[in-house]
Image (cartoon, rainbow, N blue to C red; front, side):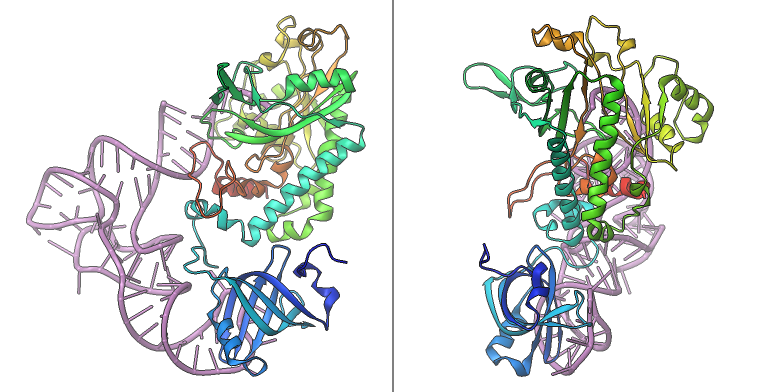
Length: 441
RNA sequence: UCCUCGAUAGCUCAACGGUAGAGCAUCUGACUGUUAAUCAGAGGGUUCCUGGUUCGAAUCCAGGUCGAGGAGCCA
């Protein structure tokens, strides 16, 4: 027995020859004299509903004629396989009932600019490409969690409101916390997860994260969702193996289960199919040498002295040298002092960006021992491996970098129906996401 | 914060010193196989704002507002 009273269009093939009642929204309508074609959308799929004037009463035909784009309605008819129907099946309509009328729907089937669409984001997500993006995003999230669960990790949620900045380097959103002073929207769950790791061995947190920085790059966002695994007794190389398998598992699962959506997005999947472990790895020294030799190939890419950090063009360059392989991982990079123990030289803490060709990069991996034990007031002398995978609707990092137009689904916050959300200067716009998508294709 | 680009009909754009235009959308009519239908007709404008140059400004100049792309910051 069905859990829900309506028949999902996606399951329509099982009802061939039967009469069903579908509930959904009018995606498009074409009239042709005594014949009306209605594309009905219920969120699961589209189906073509055909209204023949001779098969219905004048009143029902008039109702069908009156349907506007995005009118919500119930349509009853007989399911029929037909090669002329876009999905292979169509509904021979016997009854149409309007549930909620629609008028002046702003998004026509024709082209629109990004700015306009962003102002109607709550309606934009009804369109096919946005559907594909959000389905892929959901698949990435599910794949990430299920893979970690299967490896023995336990999800360990961390607070959203925190007392202080975790790493002291980012601006945070402050809010009054009762009469106890300021609290801040979470920057990271890292400190809590490190404690959890000492308790469970393998843990991860996954939740919204906030940075009050008006950044305007493809890797910096006001808010995003981040998954942060921590594992005890893992060395740097163990961590890299974990990351490579993690990212690959997510990519391969999306390829397997969401190929239709990737097709909708016109995504070239050949670069995704190559993402399988093990990834090529180069050392920091090799990366510096590579940049020294090839920096002129990318505009704005200058050689950097040993010990300095990579910029965006450097990572782009490094990744481009491994284009025929899945990923490259520059390991043993002596950087990121802010995340390393003050008792350690910053130049001894390994750090490994995963460079996804040709442009994206996933941040990851600061192994630290002294800092962790000190913070946790615990004498376990373990190395820990950590990595961050950002699965934001707006992020293009890590897995979503592989499906970059997923970034355009949400800009920064969920809109309330009927009230367009003001754009913020720090969001990742769909056009930017799409431009990233085009460069990745 | 810095650099670059942009703002004209509901939407996407053209006109680049001389009458404000097209396609789509909307409305009216025709059509039994459309699927971004097609055909015929109609309505639709504070050319972002303020000031300047000019006989004349959507167009050129200055300032401002808003938006987009890039850099840095980082995850």
